Length: 167
Image (cartoon, rainbow, N blue to C red; front, side, top):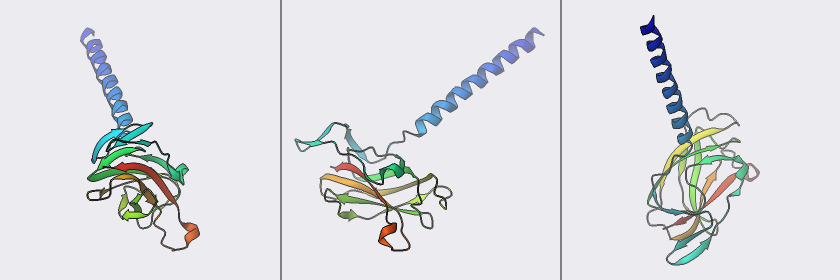
């Protein structure tokens, strides 16, 4: 009888440890960083070549953005791997447009991401992809998440602009 109580206690402790580990891992999945070269992420100011840059906010349909692995005002260069979540129907055939625009919001590098689950819904859809910032002009820029608007009708366009600094 004593041995059974000890065994039950041990099993209960192992279960508690597993549950806590699961919760910690699940919480950290929301903090997945990009694999690009990130120098600095300061929500107040960034410095590039000795020049202080003011923090900028996410623009466009920012309420559609649930999560993006590169935070606003991050200094980044080279290949960038990203994970994101958006709501509101940004996908066509599982594709979402993810590009880089200069400080004037002119696209300087086109790219895309792919849905990682059911994309045929207006609820939250997760996506991932990569884009290479190598050779792009340094300075203020934007990651542009744009709906893949198969209709071509301008009024159906939606985009989210996340400010970054290219090094």
